[in-house]
Length: 145
Image (cartoon, rainbow, N blue to C red):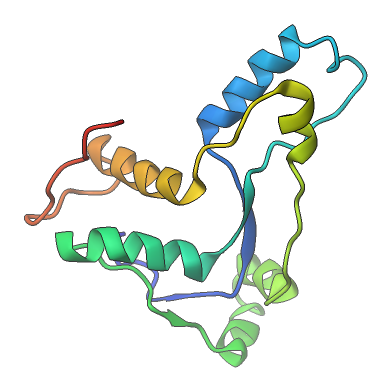
């Protein structure tokens, strides 16, 4: 949001709202099915580009800068020799990720929140908490439903 990252890498992440993680913990404590089981709590997967595009739709009109272009692989590869985090990015370059959190939904009886909405709400929270500075065009977080 602050324009520090001019480009994005083709990375995919498992995405879940922290409120879903908290809810899953509470439901697991109360569930007869949970003892002895392990649960993946992940709503879906999202490419970094898709999250940046969604955030850009919401926040570019409010004066925030998000990456719109992918960093070339050659640049990332060279940077990986000098920057340790880039080594892991290069290793994960373009690899899709499949995370299945359906068992937690089935056994614990809940539905995941919409992750696109969650990504936007997280950005608003970061702005409201002062982690990301407010721009002059910032409109404020919309009222929650």
